[in-house]
Length: 367
Image (cartoon, rainbow, N blue to C red; front, top):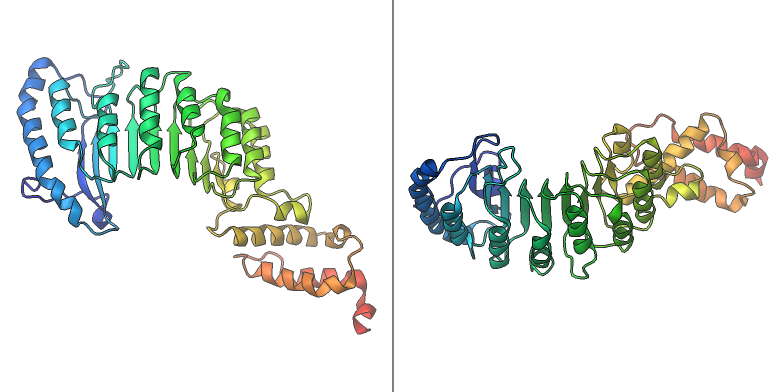
């Protein structure tokens, strides 16, 4: 009724941050039979007509209010799918979510991949697209990738459990080797991503693309792949979040990433670490390295952490070498500066200052 009046239904999860249509059915429900689909068809006709009535309301939403259509596990026969597709063609929604119901037999029942691409290509204001549990075949990749990197507004693509082995690698390679990729967020969750793309992925990240968030959870990457990714993160200054949970990564791969985020072998190594990317492997230890949104503050915290750990054994001076006395004021100022950006000081700045001053001896400060 609200849609027929040109109003959006209420979606509690969005509140005032979004307005749109949210429909969810059972994800494990049995396939709808021919007779039941026919019974539902008039309701889908009514829904498609109402969808056209609510579309003009998108144009009067506040700038910070996201418009969306989210369909979860909705079973559609061909006639119903065609109705909804035609109703969505050209609509200016900013976010689409299409989750198919495969009924446990591997056969998706929902919006087809070709229909999704048609909708995406027709909507020039779309910013976010999610496709879940819908089998994307090798014959879809060229067109889907083209729709993504030629789209004028699309910045987030999330694909969940959509590819058979080998096809996910082809999709990801196609996206990452395009010169026109404008994505800021890319999710390839549980898509059988393997070592076949690790070199392409590393080269892509090392080029400092626009991508800020990359999610490769529940794929098939290993320690060798992580080593390549870690090396790329040494020069990457744009990626803010990397998720690699539930891959084939051992403590060896974890250590490769840790050394990129916090290499405590020297103060220079700490300073040259990656200070902006948060890596999620499912271990909480990674949460502390780049927890602040400002890389400079993360850098200060790491440097102070190293100075603090060395101070416990009074070993800082052993790493300073033959530092000129003229550098001392700068060093002492730096200790105070770094301390300001640390939330919990286990070692007070004065303790580090005292240790550093002892290197030269009190007499040197009296001349």
